Image 1 (cartoon, rainbow, N blue to C red):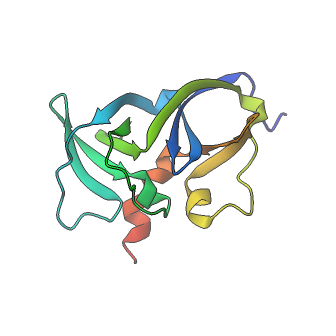
Image 2: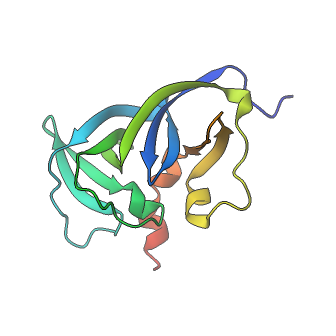
Image 3: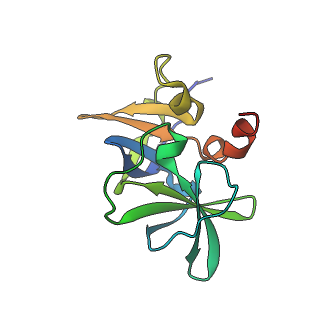
Length: 152
């Protein structure tokens, strides 16, 4: 029995602090430009607030904070990747969008042991592309933020 799945997987890619990340396209509901975010009092630090996406309330999750990175310096347009989980809508805030990549399911490598702890906790593996590494994000772990920050 093979350890690696066969076939190809399509990923929606995004840039955060100069690093390329990918999310399996089957988990992505939408990609959109963020207009205005309304702050939510007493929300976990990763939550930037909520926004309105075509009449739907979407929780905006700051991926820089989730990854332990400093805030964005630029106030230029922000992009978000729309994810649905357990009937809730989330927008993962990223610096910019990449392209959709179709990659071999068997070419993914495991999470490196030397990867920063915050990143490893929400990653499911990496792809070694020609010019760079693409970190595959585990959506279920990304949205696990409230559970691991409650004890802090």
